Length: 338
Image (cartoon, rainbow, N blue to C red; front, side):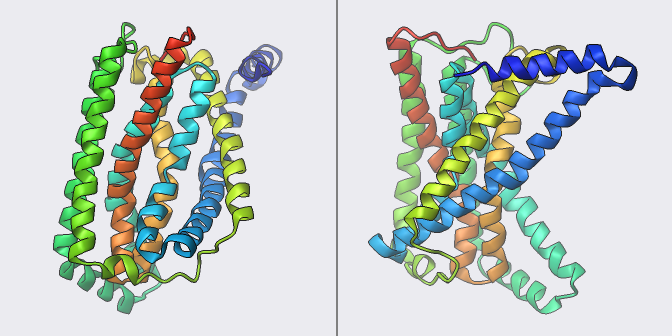
C-alpha cells in the first residue's frame, strides 16, 4: 500500500515552506477540512444510505418485515465497522474506539439533534399540523421513548466499562501517554463486558416484539429496494471513504500533534476516533432517525428511537469483533498501537 499519509504530510510541508508568505502553513488544514466535510457529510452518509435501503429491502424480501427494523438500524453501523477495520489495516488498534465512542454520539444525535431538527423544519415551514401531530405522538408514546432511552444509556455504560477494561483508562479528559492496549486476559474481559450488554439488549428487544409486534410490522416500505447491486455499490464506496478518513486522522496526528494533544491526550488517533470518527459514523443513523420522526407513526417512531438503542447494541458487537481481531493480530506477532 502506498504511503498516502507520508504524501499528505509532504504536501503540508511543501505548502508551508514554499508559500509561507501567503499563509501556506494553514492551507493543508483548510484543504483537509474541506475533504473531510465532503467525506463525512456527503460520501459516507450517501453510500451508507444506499447500503441501508438495499439491506432493508433484502431483509423484507428474505426474512419478512419483522426483521427489518433491526436490519435497518444495525446496517447503519457499517461505517463504524469499516472505519475500525481500516484503522486495523494501518496497525492502529485505536480504531476500536470508533464503535465505542459512537454509543455516545448516537444518544445526542438521535434523541436531541434529530427531533429538534425535524420540529424546527416544520416550524420554519409553518406546518403546524405535522408539528402538533408529532408532539401528540411523543406524549402518547412516552413509555416507548423512555424504554429506548434507558437501553441506549445502558449500552453506553457498557461501552465505557469495556473501554476502561480495554485500556485501563477512560476517553474523557485526554488519554495519557502511558495508555496502551491491555494484555490478553483484559481483552477477553472487555469483550465479555460487551457481550453481556448485547445479551441484555436482545432480551429487552425480544420482549418488546412480543408485547407490541405492530411496531415492527407496520412500516412503509416504499423507499427500500431489494437490490444487490445497490448494496455492493454502497459498501464499496463506504470502504473507500473510510480509508480516506483514517488517512486524514493519521496525517493530522503527525502534523498537528502539539495542538491535538491538548484536547485529546497523547493517544491522538484513538481520541479522534472516539469523538470525531464516532460523530462522523453516526450521521447515517441520524438520517434514519429524522426520516422515522418525519413519518409520525408509532412504527416509524420506534425505528427512529432504535437508531440509537439498536445501533448502540450493534456497536458493542462491533467492539467485540474488534477486540477478537486485536487478539488475533497480536497472536500473529503484529504490533498495534493506539
